[in-house]
Image 1 (cartoon, helix red, strand yellow):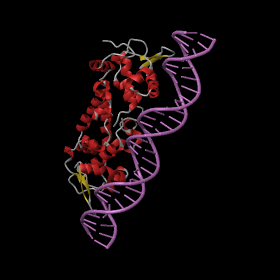
Image 2 (cartoon, protein in one colour; image 1 turned 90 degrees about the horizontal axis):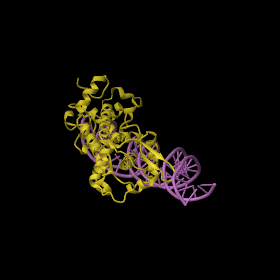
Image 3 (cartoon, chains in turn red, yellow, cyan, blue; image 1 turned 180 degrees about the vertical axis):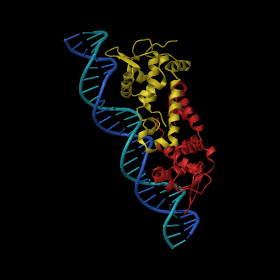
Image 4 (cartoon, chains in turn brown, orange, purple, green; image 1 turned 120 degrees about the horizontal axis):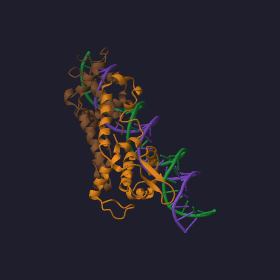
Length: 149
Length: 149
DNA sequence: CTAATCTATATTAATTTCGTATAGATTAAA
DNA sequence: TTTAATCTATACGAAATTAATATAGATTAG
């Protein structure tokens, strides 16, 4: 019942981008350093995030990444949905045919409800919420981009 | 973000026991057969369930397992909590010290909320709910114990 | 040109999950 | 009192998944 590093690192990456929303693109190397995450691993996460049009990029020197739309319009569920590739909380939830018993299994409905509870919770949180929260606690000095007050 | 077979099989096992609540103990072999699950694997799940006093057992021929208390008083969360051994949805949720950033990390709170959403959902479902649901769909013939109408 | 950046895939290492195997304890019933 | 049916406990192994690294390349500002 674990949310994998793909989603967790990916969300941290997106929060970093949200902090620089409206400014110049941010280098991946800088984010990896600030968040203390493996750059090469983050690169893998960016591919599906770009494909989902949550991130856009510019190449070459002084290139980098930025959010495709404003932090208020991106929920954590948007991110997790893209990065969590596997079948869901249980194999039978997405694909009832994997199990003979799906039609009459009382527990299948339980896992379905869990999946919905997670989705609802994550849909209720936007990147803007997380940026706001972080600014309560963090000192802004020495960051790659200038954060909004 | 998957609920493992430990919890899923374990819940099915507990539903089987709930169906025989108030009757003679049920053999594990019978349950494994009916649910088409590996008996040796279920045996492993029973150990922590017994330790949590959700199940009691009698040994020897004509022995077996039964619920320690009535199906209305056992929630799916009671079961999952016991069987899902790992650290939770994220390592930092149970133990903030695993990560330097816990104190100021905006995403940690997200995973915390997810954990609570799951717990709340599962706490709202009892074994009695699941037995009732199953009886809508299943033919009772040929089972180990006589199910209540 | 060239160095800094992003893009994409392949490969490896570590961990976890799933299941089996083995050895034993208890007890009803013949 | 023996035996077979059941539960108990731990150890082991195979498969799958996750996490991370490696390699090769494409783009572009300066």
